[in-house]
Image (spheres, helix red, strand yellow):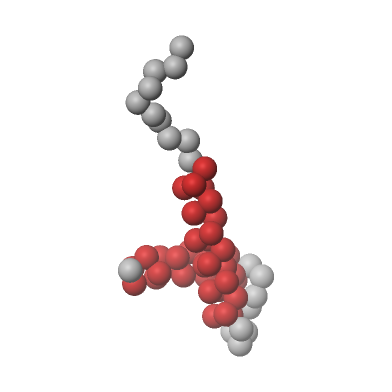
Length: 58
């Protein structure tokens, strides 16, 4: 679980750095919000990903 969280925070850090300076006091908070947003986007993608059913449609 910690590996997943580290990967998300590593992905969120450069995105956050585009909007907030790395030495700002609230960088960690904004990075956490960006990581939560990435989790939400991944969940939405997984929810609407087309699944193949076993039925053959004509």
